[in-house]
Amino acid sequence: MNHPILQIRRINVILVVLFLSGCGSAATATLMPTVTPVDTATPSPITNLCKLPEAAYHGDVGLGFPRYSTRMASTGTVSAKVIFVDFPDAPATETPEQAFSRISPGASDFFRAVSYDRMNLQLEPHLVWLRMSNSSADYMFQRGFSFDLHRAYIQEAIALADADVDFSKADAVYVIANPQAESISFGPGFTPLDSSVGITADGNTITNGATSGFDIKDWGFLWLNHEAGHTLGLVDLYAFENNTNNYDGFHRFVGNFGVMGYSIGKAPEPFAYERWLLGWLDDNQIVCQASNGEATTLSAIEEQGGIKSVMVPISSTSAVVVESRRALGYDSQLVKSGALVYLIDTSIPTGDGPIEIFPVIDNDPYRDQSPLAVGESVIVENITITVIAATETSDTVQVTIAN
Image (cartoon, rainbow, N blue to C red; front, side, top):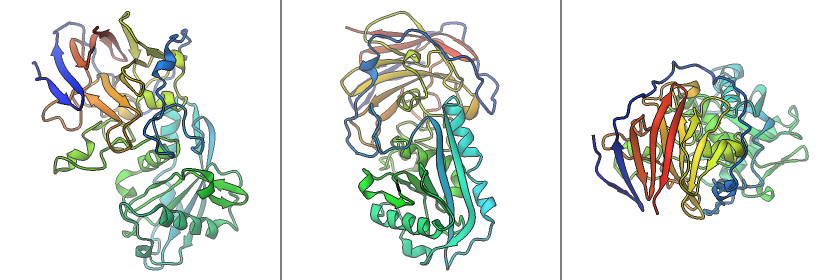
């Protein structure tokens, strides 16, 4: 089946089916990725061309190298205090232990798996409901509410806990609101631009955290992974504005893929580029290709070890990226396995599509059919990506760059 040429921003995309044989099938879903040795191949000499610099200049989140200095550590043990608050008009009706179980151990397990055991998020709960001074509605949680209001809310919660909690070595603080408090409608991340507007407790200036909202009942532990993703410096991959007059328009860039997009989508594991930025992938697991070369076998992003991505820089701030996705690990609900192709542009702001998956196929708003099977090919600008072979845990791709 041939798809028409699709004009997306400056990108011309054609999906071509070559009807080659030998297509691999998706492996049976497992809860956690299989552990294999890390690849130790020699890094590409042009790897730095694919380490795109930050060009959207938010100051707190971005996809460019290096990450902002105020963001949380992404490797090793990361210590996060968890405190629980309720309100005079919305007293808690569940125990702190029950509320904590909404995020733990799920959030820590997720980070440990998708970082290939490189990040250990250690959640340290203070299992007491702390009563905030005002009614829940007085904190004015609504989309677009101010940084100052959010900071004051966290500061009050920390002050209530400070007599019993040592914040001196906390890398982050997460405030869990009574999940039944409807006026605390959503749970944003706390990512000050610099330490001067952080929150000081026990001599420690806190510049990373998040607060939960009523919607934690929908998002579960992946709420924390998404918001903690911001404290790691990652951007939102869903659209801030819906241009299609329906719910799907918010997910028009990456669909079901990536925890920073639709967090509870069918394939929430982070993209290869994000993992590289966070230090979860090594340079020798990335093939940075600036000219035509040999075919590359990519091991599934959900498993540890092997080459994880081919990246082709197309400007000083953008690249075409290819990775292999399989119905493994936290991507177990993946609709179609294959080579996933996307464009990354570090000059595009958070919420405006800094990552966009191709091809864009009619009647497939969540990009479920975008991964390429054996014999399928996509052209992004002058770059052709063709899958020439596959196994249950890999895709072999040929990347051709036209003159």
